[in-house]
Amino acid sequence: MRVDVVTIFPELFGAFLETSLIGRARSKGLLQVEIHDLRDHTEDRHRSVDDEPYGGGGGMVMTAPPWIAAVRRISEGRPVRRIYLSPQGEPLTDAKVRELAEAGDLLLLCGRYEGLDERVLETVVDEEISIGDYVLSGGELPAMVLIEAMSRQIRGVVGLPLSVENDSFRAGLLDHPQYTRPAVVEGLEVPAVLLSGDHAAIESWRREQEVLATRRKRPDLLARES
Ligand code: 9WO
Image (cartoon, rainbow, N blue to C red; front, top):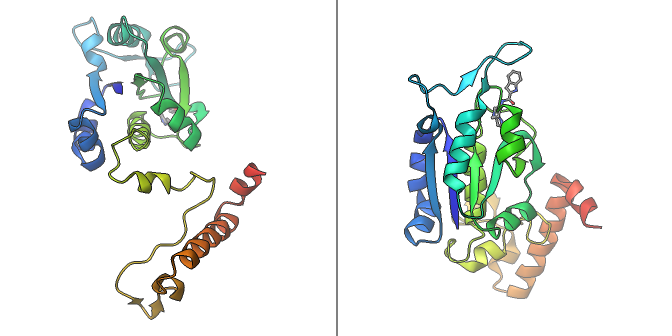
């Protein structure tokens, strides 16, 4: 899968793209990520990308022409889903991540300031996605969240297929608690069943813990199931 990203802060993606999971996916050829500087698609001497909002109100709005030029040039002649990351978007869920990971190539628009001129959305954006109900300073972190979540769903990216299969949300439940050495921490022991060697008992304990954790921390997930 190929993901193109348009931003005025391309350097924000450097360490992210080189690090573990994403770096491995890219070097295996399973994921291709191309970062584009919006300013490379401006026509004026100052490479400007923002202007005052019509109607006043302060702050700055990103102008339409560089965005329209960038998106058209990058997606020319191939099918690409063009996605704007914004708080006004459709909420990102596990199901949506899986859908996008299988959808083919994507182009992510990372806005800044008070957002994009609405005519960009009307002409070169297919959908708007939100990673949660809060406002950040731009769409770059949400783009990285989306890329990382999708990359985990691409076959061969995560080492053991089991570790994705067992992920939280696969069954609509939260994960069970996890323990590793040492056996005692601050006087707290590991649940005895995990040391029993009884794999069936361990499995049923884990399933029970998943339901208990979900009921206690995210009852809305159980309500959604039934
Ligand atoms: C900034 C602002 C300042 C004064 C009054 C209103 C305002 N709205 C915004 C705003 O929403 N800016 C956004 C910054 C414009 C689009 C890029 N930015 C962004 C994306 N912030 N948060 C996101 C985001 C994206 C996806 N999921 C969650 C948050």
